[in-house]
Each structure stands twice: as structure tokens, then as C-alpha cells.
Image (cartoon, rainbow, N blue to C red; front, side, top):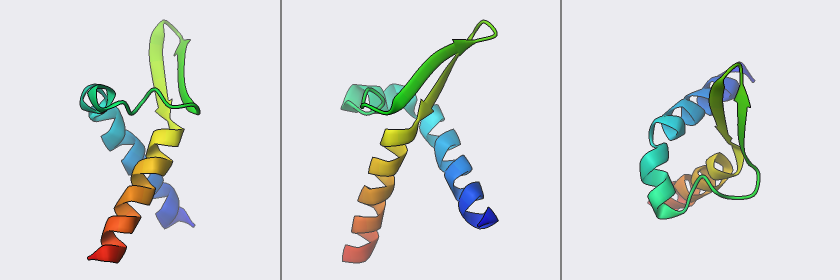
Length: 64
């Protein structure tokens, strides 16, 4: 269980770093991606994008 939580956390961190590139591709604006302002800082939680990219990665790994 903890291993999956670490993987999900790392995926969220990587996707947050790649946000500008993903926005150009249309990711990050999907329903379920959360953007909010808290303590004077804008936060972005790409839940739907993470699930979609995970599904794509899973399909690619199945094909290879």
C-alpha cells in the first residue's frame, strides 16, 4: 500500500514539473484536475491527468 502511495506521489511531482509541456498538449485542463489558491500560492493537483497518463503508460507496457 505504501509503495503505491509513493508511486502516486512521485507521479504527481513529475507531472507538476511537466505542467507547461502538458498544457500545450491539452493535459491539465481535464475535468477533475484541481487548481486552487491557498496561502497566496496557486496549487495544482492533476488527478484526472495522472489517471489518464497512468492508463496510457500501462497500455504501452502491456504492448511491449
